[in-house]
Image 1 (tube, rainbow over the protein chains, first blue to last red):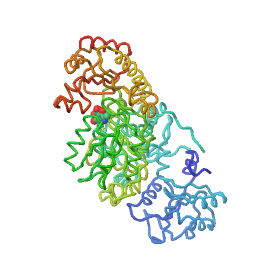
Image 2: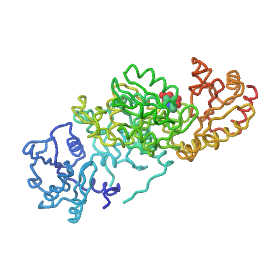
Image 3: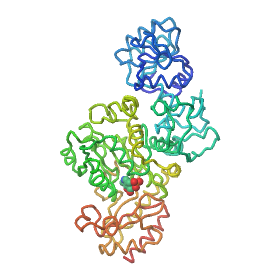
Image 4: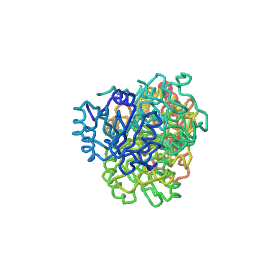
Length: 172
Length: 427
Ligand SMILES: Cc1ncc(COP(=O)(O)O)c(C=O)c1O
């Protein structure tokens, strides 16, 4: 996998196949980017479990927070990492110790660790680094264009409508 | 996992514009509405809190405008864009986002006259100081930069004579001092020059000119290059510090490499208010679809007219960078190999009187204050825009008594030349 350039097909297949997500570093502070992302993913129909030892046992956006990946109530399709790159090797060990491995490990903007990525990929886990799933979902659904942002996509086909007003989905 | 990168002409037609999902309308509708119905209060809260993408109120965003914005971001090679009511509004919002009272910025002296007024007079009321510099003498820029200097501003092709500026050299000076380079790309258009590829961090432009291209709509845009690190210093608190009006959100941290465009929208446009009309956004979008064809014809016609004028007995001089013996020609070729733009100046023999007679003698060429129309346009600055100045001041501003400025259109070039010739006969 070329981690400098992901194709839209690669990102799109991940965002349409994944149903359940654990967000490591989810914040209860509504001004934090992790809160933005969690709220957006919930709105798009993903099941999200926040992971944050400081918030363990409390709810964020109505979802019960776990202290660690080991304490997740069940398997998840994707682990989304909202922590500095330096924390990624430790988190990778935790992921590889999970009973059921996730299909995808996603690292947020500025988060990247190529050695960890190689370890995860060796176990068949797909990896995305230095990207934001909210931005990528917005880009591929084309919602992000409503904010004047360059989606870098062109299409003359029908956009996939989501629920309610002003909501698009990603075409499979 | 490389993907095909679409060409400029394809982006100019398709970027931002999907078919309407409800009706299949292929052309972007004119969303002539001021507001948008929320699903519920939570949806409303997400939109107001910047947590969801979507429209709230047309002073801040509109779906027709959004297609225009994405298309301009794509054409300039930026991460995002914000379209506003005019080129001047774009400049105001850019500076509002980076300046506070007591700050200064460096601007090229070679500039559109309206920008000289905006920077030199109106901005004073905000406590923003402009420091004029000579872009051909970079030391006049560096020597004026201090800890309150927030940016360098230049035009890619400078109004009125259309000289190209060495964008890469300007970007280096800006970045060596930890400040962004802002380029007004009005006169070149992204078909000829994409300043972000040469190191510019922000592009502003009047859409009123070549982008709309038909002289029918006012508009302006800010394009975010996504290249500048707003958090590297404390100079740009609108981007790098928590914003009280958004519950403590830090825009750069939250929106990454398109934070500048977002800040201009959710702080500047929201509070200062110069929104573009949806109808104008629509007309400009239509204009952009033919930008590549028009711009090439503009350039080809301009070169033919400039060569003709150069050989004309009633013409004293021609300032067009497309002419091979022009002092700006080598730099122009480097930045804009496809053409040298369509706006340039020439001198009529006989000074002020001859200049007046020329502009009053044209038939199909329009005597008016604008550039970048399908029609050929002419103005005699000394008797119009620069009338109030002394002879010396006019000469310094490049608007001497014999100066005539042309904006060559896309009519049949023989007809443009014939009209010029008959008007020169009368001059
Ligand atoms: C180079 C340049 N920049 C900015 C502007 C201002 O644009 P607007 O008239 O759309 O406010 C103009 C207008 O003539 C211009 O020529």
